[in-house]
Amino acid sequence: MRFDVNLSILFTDLPLLERPAAAAKAGFDAVELWWPFDTPEPAEAELRAFVTAVRDAGVGLVGLNFYAGDMAAGDRGLLARPDGSARFQANIDVAVALAGELGCTVLNALYGNGPEVDRDLAVANLRRAADAAAGIGATVVVEAVNSHDNPHYPITSSGAAFALIDEVDRANVGFLADLYHLHRMGEDVLALIDAHAARFAHVQIADDPGRGLPGSGRMPYQEIFSRLAAAGYRGHVGLEYRHEGPGAFAWRRP
Image 1 (cartoon, rainbow, N blue to C red):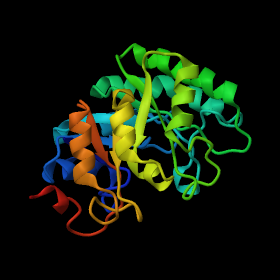
Image 2 (image 1 turned 180 degrees about the horizontal axis):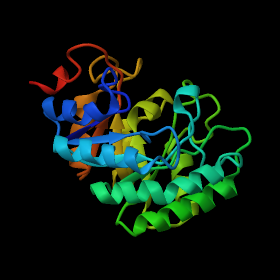
Image 3 (image 1 turned 90 degrees about the horizontal axis):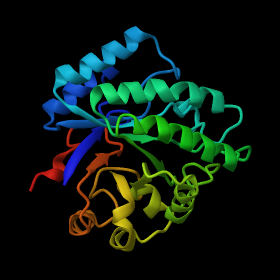
Image 4 (image 1 turned 135 degrees about the vertical axis):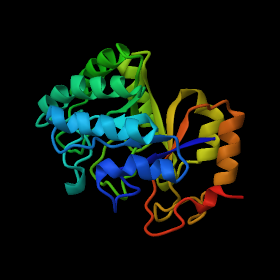
């Protein structure tokens, strides 16, 4: 398996621009992030500083979220929200340009919390994002998010995510298999891998319960990794778990 570190949830004791180098020092050659800026259209100087930090660290950017609102305040995307759609659309070209500059080919579009969400708007915005991403050879991904941690998020199962992806009908829209969220919702992640790994455009992991590192909960991660490999998954696996202090990556050592 090829692992990458999500810098929005790990190394958060460091300033953003120091995290790519910290990931490299920890032995990783790839990172991913939620949208790392406070606005959908950050100043050029902010974008340049971020690009420089990633390049200087010698890591690849393999996943990036579109602007999703104020994540710390509980926002989970603007794709389907009439009050946020204009901000999402303003971010599309900015995010795609940033991804293209750093060779990133996975862009995550979070749906947005309900109940004032609009399915037709979500489909239209996904098509707009996918068409822009196609210009850099990138895939836009849709993920299911668990309702225990996010009670107002409408897309909570792999089936719901697949239905949305099929409705969008773009070749470069795929499934982000966040196995923590799916397991939290009671899905059999081993069966999901066996049946649908060909639809996985990206994978993210954390253990359940607790959203900690693999081995801290009940999920059978050695079997999960074996099934992903057997199913032919060749993408990165994003480490999107919470951990403070030393030992965040000790589970990777034999």
